[in-house]
Length: 297
Image (cartoon, rainbow, N blue to C red; front, side, top):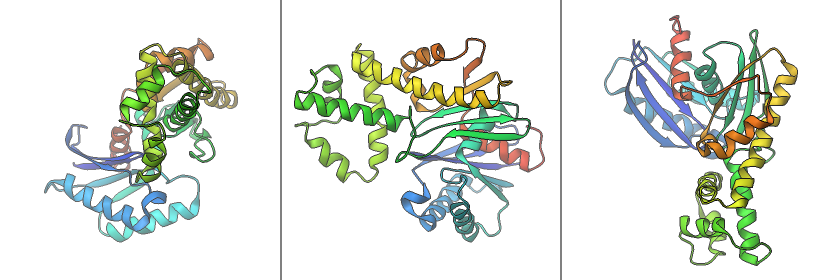
């Protein structure tokens, strides 16, 4: 049995070919395929190209699409389904959100709570077959504690330091050096000219981590604020499902390690079983596809 899994998140899309034992045979990456960024037809066309490339002349039994944007809005869901059907009229496949893939990777179908802090942020509780979400409103409205949210904090601090409203610290130097800016005002052009400004802003979370590693107080505080926002996602979910104990964390924000994990854990009940997710959303997409094929996960 061969399954192609796709994890198309807000920043990039990953394609992988798996065998029946979950061994990854081939992997490819592509820039973001979010339909609200590039359009439905272009999304489906890029998915077609990616699937054909990762197939590598293998006979594929099933395709599992994990797609950002495939959420609660029925109009968007229908548009995605229609676009994919036009490009994959004869293949067997399933479509779910990238969050569903992360949930499967983290909890393997068991009860628990999944917190994702990547480009965006969302908490998803799974309890007795029911699901409940907190967050996931997108970067215009929410996504507190996400990489984009942290990036926005960095931009605010950077502009204040450039003006003299705040004393310059290592954070200022890290931004100037990482983006190779000649003048602070160059930031405006870089972001306005960038083809994916959301991703560019989210990438500043890594710059924040670099500054925090240099003991910059503002960068460390950014991560503490992010941790508090993420803890609120978890606390709100657990208030509705107090029996849940398993909490799994995923997303690039947690690459900041102790700067975000330590304050996050301090904000939460110490009795909770909190750990980083061991598997990726891409593998979660594979597990969903395997389940749809009738195999045991």
